[in-house]
Image 1: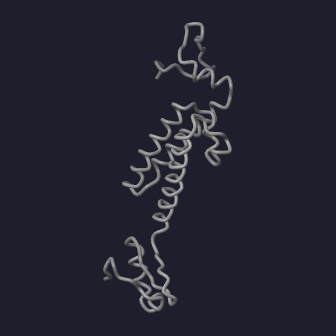
Image 2 (image 1 turned 120 degrees about the vertical axis):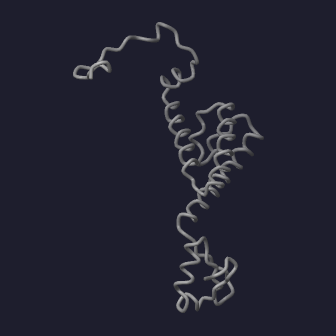
Amino acid sequence: MTGPDEIFQASDLANKRLLVLEAARAGGARVRDKDGTGLVMLPEGDLDVLKELSRWSSAHLRLESLLRRSDRPTVAELGDLAWLRVFDRDDLDEFLVELHEVLIAAHADGSVNALKECIHAWRVTASQLEDPLRREVLLRGRLEARDLVEAERPAGVASPDVP
């Protein structure tokens, strides 16, 4: 059994292969290369989580900085976050808060599922707001009686009261 602070040598990859792999599966195996470079082996899922957290943490900081300088960042300033261009300042602030919270939760959980769901939901909303008609319906804020019409049940679809 290896300790959490054990550092393997490059030769251990041949001689103690099973111990190195066991340490890697348990969260990380540190290996010192012949030239002194430190290497780490860890489960691929852990690396994926770290990459996503890094990517979205960086995006969060960039957007936060942009919003401190300007009420409406330009598409060029948003860069890979240009899909946010359809949102007003209040929505961008809300996105920033929600992103911050979900980043903390993802880090605590060791999973980016909630982060991916959050980003997906905001992107879907952004794509809906791209359409002028949908935008007006979504943002108008109030419905009036004339906006509603009775829909007929499609042919062949049973009523919910019918077993």
